[in-house]
Image (cartoon, rainbow, N blue to C red):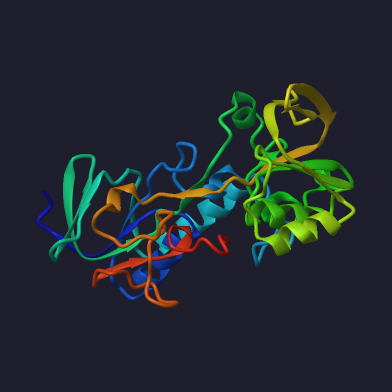
Length: 291
């Protein structure tokens, strides 16, 4: 066990975590950050699996996700943030100083900032992972405006409000958007379904399951099953919109979460139910989910 009591420990290394690190370091708090490996086995959050980021201020020509995260990391370190490339295995917020365990080593802290983010849910197809960033995406607002999606037919998979929003957004660029849902009824609000039905660029397919995403080096099509009929159609991109899973399991029984697992904060603040423990980023924001 380390005898040192840290001023602040930051758990997570996405944009929210590094923003917290920069401010804490500039305040001379000497923060300690645990990067973690939640995004596809890589530290740095969901942006590590995004090829091109075109909507982040300050990058007129766009920037790759990994490059952006490396820049944020350098900025955090410049002001004195210490970064451990390790997962946090356990926390104890019952008494102060708080306990954070990583690689079997116990660390103590006066304050903890939770910035563990959320992980996109996937269909579980091998082709889905293989073609991720090569036509398969879990974020239409991140990737939908990329050149290879423009004036092409695209697919959105999902049945909730998020899927409807993604489909509407993609119609700005695509020639057509096919919204695929495995059930007969959409979970989305009626107003969202009505908007999709009235949009001439959106085709709704219910009772339809994605069997395979086609393509070798990039997405070229999709294989669908509707009842007993199997069909293939050429598409340039597949956007998965079946939800996100917040990375909060290690906080079970300590931090208050909502019914879907997101950390509950007080009003628009970063305060959790435990004084001295704060939350920021996707782990507590299921509305915007933008860096």
